Image: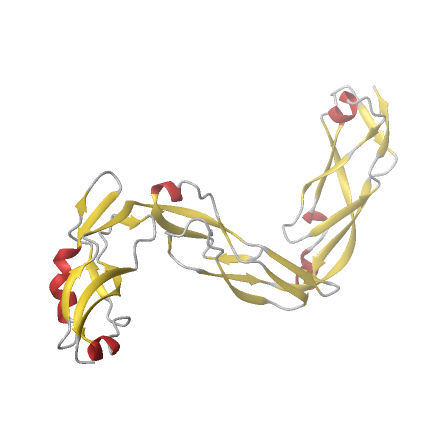
Length: 286
């Protein structure tokens, strides 16, 4: 074991101090091979896997538009100093490390959730699900940033929901675009859930666009609206909450012998409105 030998081994490397305006576009080499000389005993004890060599990228040399390089001879002393006593560094097997670096670009992208929520019978969202943040700043190589239009979230499901919820969801990183930096990787989704009930109300309608010399008489003066609303908002609903119009021009243009009621104003918290009748017979007197 006292006889000296020459052998080749690998040393792990890490890249530090990348210029702020640049970003690695491809995965660079993670190790470099070195040749050392030592006794058989020293070689048997040689373990360089934990001795990571930091490669400084703040003084890069440029080969062409996106290709930069580092000369490994500049790290000869650093590697040599990490070797145990009695181990001599003969050479570094590769003289140049090439790196593909591109201009760093940023873009604010909207967050798109991917969820499936089943609510308990009689319960539903009382307002739109809140997404925080609703957009994320993404940075990366220009050619990758240009491919992105939105940020998808990981899918999630909730069942039998009947109370407010808050859930943290990870973003779904594009698998083919590996050199991106995200402002955040977690988004919070919050939902306000309430019990809903059904209500019915009679609302008068207005006929519009009637010629001045026409007098229109309808067989009914109001329509019956059936709607869904949360219990907390039920008492806010009255006849004045809605406005219903029948446009005579629509009937005339489409040669209809009836009027078509249309809801032109309703509370934002009211859901699933149905009304009867959907057709209103009328008579014209000139």
